[in-house]
Length: 435
Image (cartoon, rainbow, N blue to C red):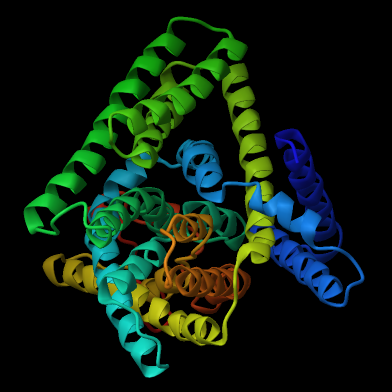
């Protein structure tokens, strides 16, 4: 099957799924597209098992797609940039402490907690899983997925203060998580000695290097946009910034995701205010919203189709189901500890229920699946991939469908703009609901 035929099949499937969801289900697009594509895949598998149809063509389409390459070195750059464009930089600065802690120490802590509990759980079900491989699972499932999270936040009517925490963390933590995953992977493969110095240096090079590169490229693009007034050229400059910036980051071994996020914040704030005409702003928003919608649809259809390439075993299913509460517990710890420490060290308070909202709003998605598919061939790969898939489907479907209801049930203040703008690190006033 040619690349064009595979692309056509994916776009047709995404369009059909999007139509069904918009016309009939009216679920959040992230949830609806995944559920429809997953159900369609299961129906095809069932018909194949009954010898009604041949599964070879469907499998050849899915197997011809390098999911890791498509997501991590393709879609991710555009989707992160599109998300960062609409994040208020001033509000992000006021949330810098909780966001930075959860996107760094929170990811590392969640990796360790998830990996350790998953390793113990594997022993309980009789599966001999080496501890480094369990940590690999912890690293790939630790980050909240910015694509899934931003998709859910759009329709959840979350107060801006909480939305900024959740969105800001998800935009940055995937870059950190990829670095942690690669560090553990190199240790598993015997390429690197897992000393504290090696890991710290690797994180510093990737994260700080990516932020600096994104800032430099964003400022250069901003100055180019400021020197003219032609929306077509300015849109082309943003495309060049995303594709060229990500390619440069990969080439010099810094974090591509962090590069495009920082560049998107520069363009979405400084360039939007000082370098764009009203017409350019309108075209920029429309263009990147279209990119975001199309790629989101394709991505979650692809996640549903990946069921064709997963070898499911009973042990893997048991471990996957066990991984759900483990993932939620690790997320709760990685959120509650930083917030509790900030509460102790500050006179300001967070909104009541913030820990529950941020725990339940930490969706996993395509990044976890892509990292799972990048695992090297071994006797453990299929088990970890199946467990990853189960956690991701649960996260997007169950957490995604109930997140808005949780926010409403906790009676979080509906108008965070009324909060004191001088609040330290953006904490909101307490809500009437219990914590």
